[in-house]
Amino acid sequence: HDEDDKEHHQASFAIYNISGSRIINTTLINPNIGSKNDLSVTELGDRFAVCYANGNDNHAEFKIYNNSGVELVSQTTVDQNMNPNSDSDNLVSCSAVNNTRWSYFWFDRASSSKTTTFSLLNQNGSTIIAPQEIDSDEGLNAQVASASLDNNKMAFVWYDSKDKDITLSIKDLNNNF
View 1: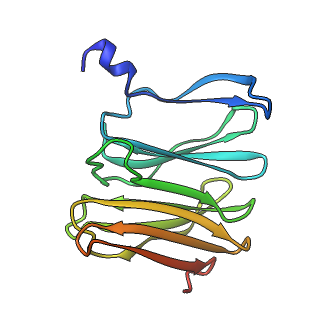
View 2: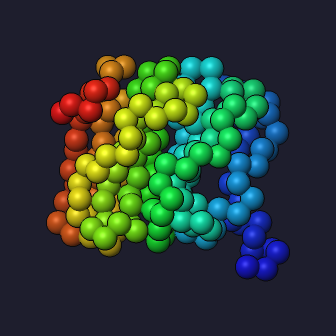
């Protein structure tokens, strides 16, 4: 990439109040996220997690910041070879289950069978449930989304390009259906 093109492949955030006024200036998350990338953010009480597919190094990564924009957890990798193959195409999704638990859900295109995978983490970024495949054969393209239910369940929905359908899975904090 030339220098002008690199500017378009940075991940940043700014914080605004309810009136739309910026209260925290633009903060750089990653200076080179690559041209194949995706972002997701989730609130965790007094902090928030930013999840991203990094096409520059093929990782699924996150950082955690407090609500004043101060980095609390540095860049952490949940998948060292997810191989994002498209830009901003719902490749990753993170969602708070409650103030102390959140899920990271992603499409792992690098695995031989192209899987959708999730992990449960705590508010400090520590793994509670190690990466688990939900669907083990997605085809070449998938899209993922996640949400919380009742402060103790995770809902995962994904598009499966091999089966050409959309599937929903609900799990509790113990990884039970």
